[in-house]
Length: 130
Image (cartoon, helix red, strand yellow):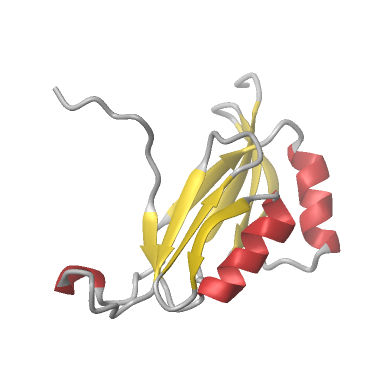
């Protein structure tokens, strides 16, 4: 068995500066590693979530990591305590809202915004299912 210590996605995008600013200012992430021509690593305020962003075409990476990531169909879900409060904040920051705040019958209150790399961020509050 392989013992896993943590997990984080690594997304390939040339928008390292923009995603750094976005996740720091909107979600309070802290940058723990940043080399603007190579890689950005972010950690959430409580340390529970990590995100990695890799610059495309970097010579130290294998060829399959050189292309840009296609953000279509890719979603980052971030759980919050109060989706309505988060939604109001997102609107006050003029974020690109790709899915307005809605309640789902399976037990979610959520909305989605698009980050600067084109990735959908689903901001979710778990609630009792209907």
